[in-house]
Image 1 (tube, helix red, strand yellow):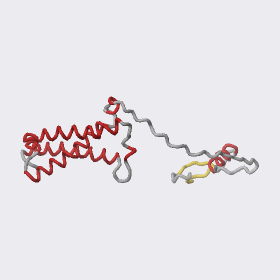
Image 2 (cartoon, rainbow, N blue to C red):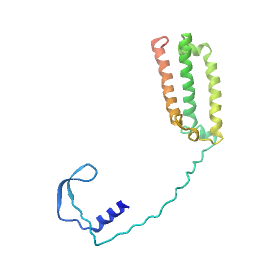
Image 3 (tube, rainbow, N blue to C red):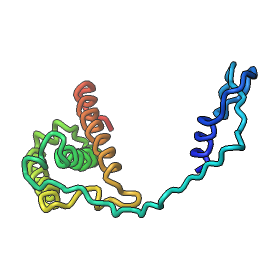
Image 4 (tube, rainbow, N blue to C red):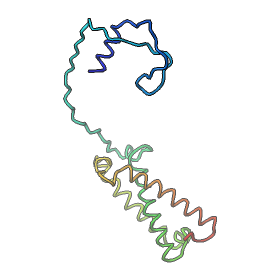
Length: 175
């Protein structure tokens, strides 16, 4: 309401010929030439606004088509890869600490079957709610949000690749 009054008073008031030097324009930026505007008291202006009632937030419709869920920009691919990378990074580090095997030795000594089994189980478990129409954001509250899961998954993907690359270059275990 104050902004409306100020705008209307600016439009109805003629600009005086007097100009002041180096005044502050209200935004903490000095202005070299800023006209000194005075209010015109002879023109009363009234303004009324109707109150808007808050609208209910409508939930966006989530597509349950298999091709939409697994699309490049869909909700499933990055989440599934991130979840697999988080489990893979923790498992690879734990086996390396307990048995002293690097990632490539783990894969060649039966780790591939475990990886494929875990991938299938986690992919199906991740896809079932998405195919039923449950959005990921609707289940994220507090500290464990969907954005935190994506970020942790991205770091786990980078960590797993960095672990494998470092062990390959070094020629042995990292830890």
